[in-house]
Image (cartoon, rainbow, N blue to C red; front, side):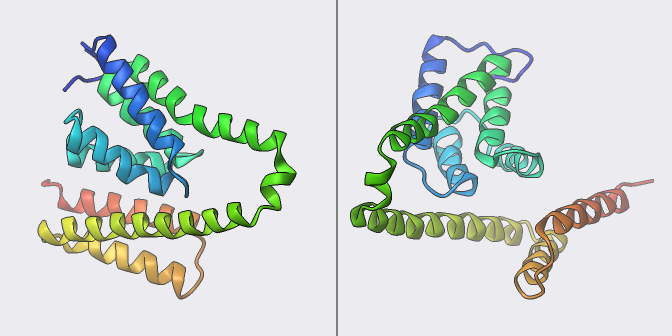
Length: 191
């Protein structure tokens, strides 16, 4: 596994990184939260380029940064694997498929907008995207339960209840969760 300081990656790595990220981006519908488990499956499970915990940490950072989650995650993961060239490769592979798709759709917008087949296909893809997001949430809960750490589970459940039941703004919840995490980390540090 390479780090950003000493990439040590050859042309084969960059081709594999570009092609795998391009195809994931091309066939992922539903935003950044859907692409993340697919990137993890490819980078961690299949290729072994990153560790599971490291990927989860980078994805958490990507989610807290301004911008598109999928692009942020690709940049951070690419940078971790191969420095700036890896970040640029993953960035290009992530943004090209939507750019190409939107360019084609823009040329034939009326045909796409009025097509019942397109509407049905999009409904089906929404269902699949929902299943992937639920899968990520279940994996996260399982990992936290396996580590027997109560604070992340309390944060997870509290954030869900605050947003779902009481409509608390997600941005406010992210800031609160970050502060709670920092306080817990500070509290756990030996003096």
